[in-house]
Image (cartoon, rainbow, N blue to C red; front, top):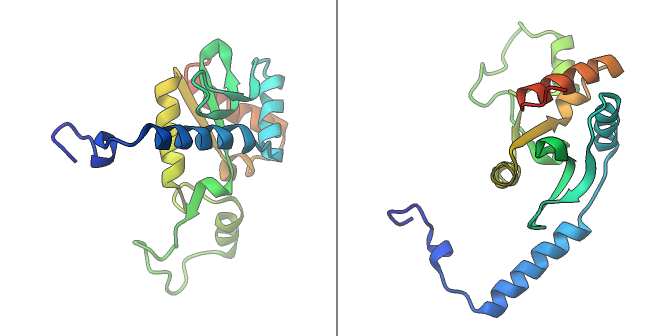
Length: 172
């Protein structure tokens, strides 16, 4: 890094054809790599139930990113993050060592099936995506799969999404 925080790569001069090819490939991925998961659709249903207008899989204004859900009235990006956006952290790393008694089978199963913020960490590419989206929109909300999937029933999911949106400034 230099004194301004720029890396050598950002100050490198690439031939224009390389920059053109890189941009074309990025854009091809943005348009072709669109996937609406079951959970993604379920979050959209909850938003509709709450009476919150939204668009599914729309592009950012610069067309560099496809948003899972976009709340135009609030300029809010909402990303539904499945397991591919997380890495599992080994319970023995930096922790209690996992030796003799203390843990119950129920809590172990709960962690294995639903996860917790302590057992999963977001991938670097997900962190980078979120940083870019925060620069493009007034607000950004992520819905981790292990939180949403742990909620049983429509009422619990509505409460969860209402709290997430309220924390992001949506007061409908």
